Length: 199
Image 1 (cartoon, rainbow, N blue to C red):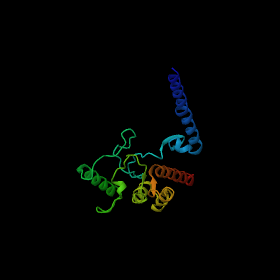
Image 2 (image 1 turned 45 degrees about the horizontal axis):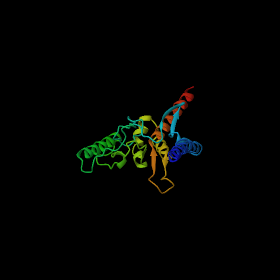
Image 3 (image 1 turned 30 degrees about the horizontal axis):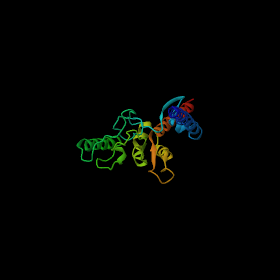
Image 4 (image 1 turned 120 degrees about the horizontal axis):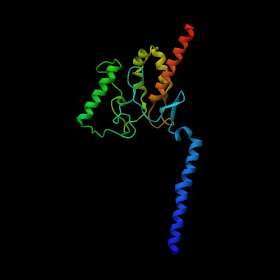
């Protein structure tokens, strides 16, 4: 009986420590030290959440920078890789189709090299970043669609190039959602400026 009581007490004590106190402590620390990250790195525009800086969104049309392809159609529940092997005919067809679509959309030569991140899906299918090279190749299309100067759009791209983590981990990258939101803000300011000039 004594052993049974000790076992029950230990279960209660460790349940309180590991199931209540520890999660509360970690949540409190993360809210203070890493508030944005702890809440999902949410991006807000006009008082509304428009996405997360950690998750890719699908952008189509000429006015926006395109993200890398997604095997899960940018949905969070079925996210993941395609699981197609290097000898898969389906993978080769997908890569060819993605490369052709990127070249056509950005008016590149039929044999122009296309950055790997624009033809291959990421492991999660939700990678929010593209390479700076992939972003720069889209500048002409986006600038023309928005009636902006190519230099102006290119400068915006360069502003959003993120360095490797701590300067050594990973590669330089551009967050597509943050860049596209900045583009919309640029368009809004341009429209306001034109309205003020006419007034």
